[in-house]
Length: 202
Image (cartoon, rainbow, N blue to C red):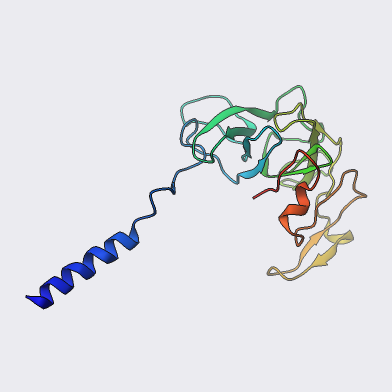
């Protein structure tokens, strides 16, 4: 009998340990407004809200609209609302050949928001899938966003590139002089938003 009680008690304890604490949540950022919200980058803005930026996609499977870097907002990191897109036909990068923009990365510096992203098809070269990195700036996390007018990291050109190693096979890249600040990927995240009114990215 004592052995049975011990086994039952041990099973109950293991089951309780497997459950997340009551004050934690497991949910998709886009659960309330979209079927997909890939590659989110999140920042806490001076208005106290968290803002998330996702890779370009339709928000739902049955809609016909294609959203260029959709944006969502949350007060508690649990409940999110769609707030609009970074780009549309009026402000999208002129050097973008096809409307495909991936992997946004948001930063705030001296009260200005910098959003970096990958344009997968550009007008910079005649090659297909000539990925380049662009940046847009805005005075608020919801815009209005202004593209810098050209890539900050141009498409790779194997004949003129510098190999970069350390993450698998060498990858040729080529960059132009930057027109906007670039935060270090090795610096503490608090340095990304060190100015008053901005909070660190996560």
